[in-house]
Amino acid sequence: EDQVTQSPEALRLQEGESSSLNCSYTVSGLRGLFWYRQDPGKGPEFLFTLYSAGEEKEKERLKATLTKKESFLHITAPKPEDSATYLCAVQAPRGAQKLVFGQGTRLTINP
Amino acid sequence: GAGVSQSPSNKVTEKGKDVELRCDPISGHTALYWYRQSLGQGLEFLIYFQGNSAPDKSGLPSDRFSAERTGGSVSTLTIQRTQQEDSAVYLCASRRGLAVSTDTQYFGPGTRLTVL
Image 1 (tube, chains in turn red, purple):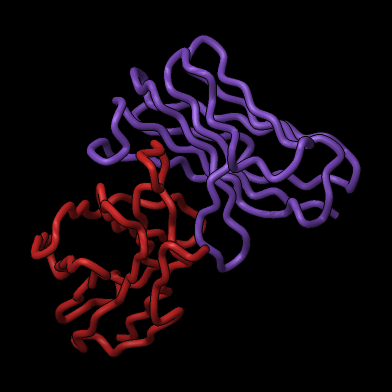
Image 2 (spheres, helix red, strand yellow):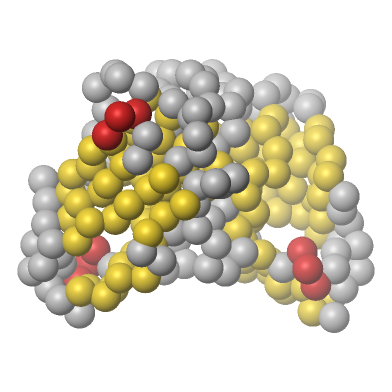
């Protein structure tokens, strides 16, 4: 069963063109939704954790929001250095101490 | 070291050979994870170690895969009789405490495995 679905698979933007990435989840009793950034040839780097609907967190040009069914990663006025794959994850069901990851969105910001 | 380290960074092997991948977690981190990432895909959970507890092996795809963690620190992932479908990047992560929901997972750079 798919628990985490990210869209779009890939997104190309011009520098300064704001947009949003989507992460839909089906896990009940959410214990945490996580956003990571992954650069080519590197391991994922932690960005945010969100715990409850309505929660928002920001870091530089990134803002993550959470509803009961999905999370958005908003990118405002992106720069080429924001190009990366963005991964979303949720804690596995039944309290298992592991994360279930989505397939990721590959973001490219053209100068 | 300051972060999670993995070795080798790249491994090319022939089908049918055994390989060992190593992970050095952040000092003091009690939890350690192995993931597999195939080309263009998300992360697939393989195995989880927490302190001295029995590991969660529920993600291992076959009995050719095994892992151990010695002394609560270094971990080795072993793949026996490698197949071409085992080609992927193998990522290790560690975190400090008991709760995956509150403790950040820190990832290593990965080992890229290519099975010819």
